[in-house]
Length: 307
Image (tube, rainbow, N blue to C red; front, side, top):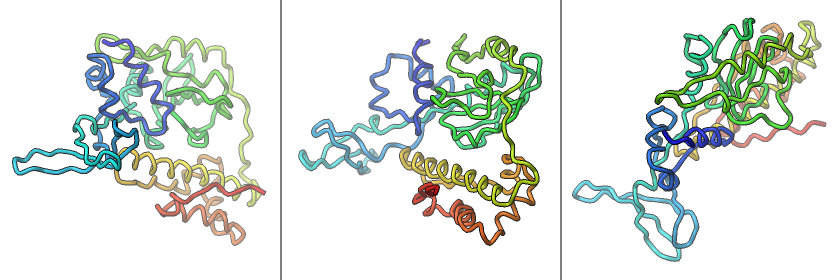
């Protein structure tokens, strides 16, 4: 198998919308595309609606015509060179599916359940496993807003892509593991090397102590924390819609987090969330809460400035 097959996947993990177009894939080494397809890492998606013009270097919208013989042909109109026929292979697009990598991690950790997608295409809960002699909950993420990832002394986070320069707040550095050094190709399958993970976590007695909201925290502190959670969700929802449009898929709104989910993230009772949302002084919180279920508002969203 091509040795550079996984390199393409790791590089795409840091990209907002990990897509490959047909004209780009035509330059890859023989066998690489089939290798990634066989592994389930490349899956077809909708054809591109635009194409780069070789004549003028600009991007043009593509239209299709079905001829009487049933054959479809595609054309782009270039302002400088008129109508140009486009090879259908140029329009094919493939998206990167990280599920096989996560399944390999789960298998290597002895977790039987399938990983659960928490934030579409970005955050997954792999499950609980004994790692370095201790029960831990394994998560995976790429391009994550850290509020998407649970905090806790038992959390271990596997990164698809690279760790941001500012690190992962509220997690001990040894609890964050980059996957690109642990996944390899063996006999046509993906394999996960767990020994480096056990070694890395063996010396970690406990994660960095973090400040958690007290159960009896003031109402204003709860409102502020909820605003931050909803702001992070709206940013993620906006990016998700833009990524879908880039793939040519219909825009899909990320589900708004439930009150009980927000309560778990902040370590407060669900009733405290409900009271905060009803508080007459929490006008901005209510605006964010309602915007999370409105596609137009999500697309227009800009994080509020802090005074």
